Image 1: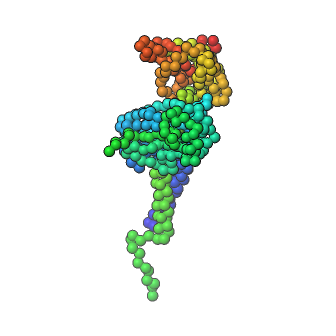
Image 2: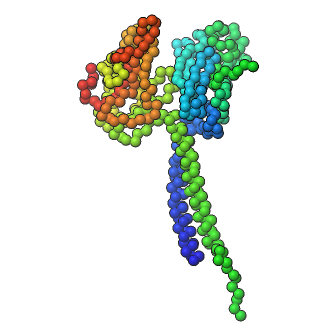
Image 3: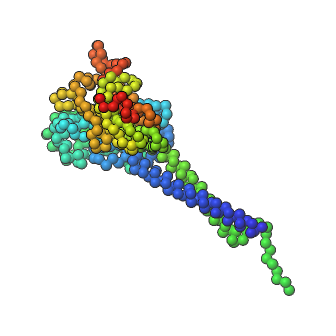
Length: 203
Length: 214
């Protein structure tokens, strides 16, 4: 009887070893694919699928900012730019997308590219003097970016600063002398900012 | 005097059996843990795969295409797979309707395999018109110029195609891009004409047809 039990256990172990080895191989393959995709899109675990999740993604470029964003179903996603621009989108299903804000200089002017759930757009900001002032100084600009290194979780109707580019104190005095403030579309030291969510109600 | 045998209970198992039982539990726990982890990772992969827009070729006899993520406004790039055979890439800039093809202004043979195609439309200096280009990788493969009035710069209409990798039969034209320019309308408004109009169209189809190089 005992011998029979041991033989059965040996059989169970052998079958289990084959299955464990096969799934181990498959797990390694799936894990490698997962790691590769995470490097491209970031890892966004949903702690509460009823809330907005935002994770900043590394782009490898100084003036290129990207986020992986999850929106819960029926969430009205609002974008507010410091220039006064405004956009919103809403879908009945949950959605994930990659949002981007990118700045580059073309023909002596600064251009801004934004891409969110509802579409993309291009606009210029500042004048030639701002482009000239910032040339070679972009690494000194202060950057505040939501979701860097940690997933930001927001209520569907919550608001948050997604990105702010501003001049550090060391550059402000010089900028005040050199720049035409009326051409900036914003107030120094702020260069550009974008919020997500509706404007908070004023008390 | 006979030695007294230790009493063995019916449920009692030996050390060897215990070891085998422990090993069996351990092996199947590993299997269970692997399958759970695979399921968890595959769910996360399913969320990420559409975001990276990678070309998936399951049937090598068909076209495959995916439009790549925009990194700048009006950036149009596609990752394309062309099956073995003779195929050409065609460009049209006039008489573009909502469906069907248009008169070819330029075309180029496209070898079998994977290609990165990028289309661009830039204004020439001093209002001299527009240059429409198509690159395959780093190589300029198609180019044409149009006068200033060709694009009134009122906007355009186009379908948002191939956000996800798709496969299409290779015996029919695969339209990558169909942009129809909005035209000025009375009252300061603008509208996209219902019939053929100016714009940009890019497609791949088998070579040897009547459309080959104009």
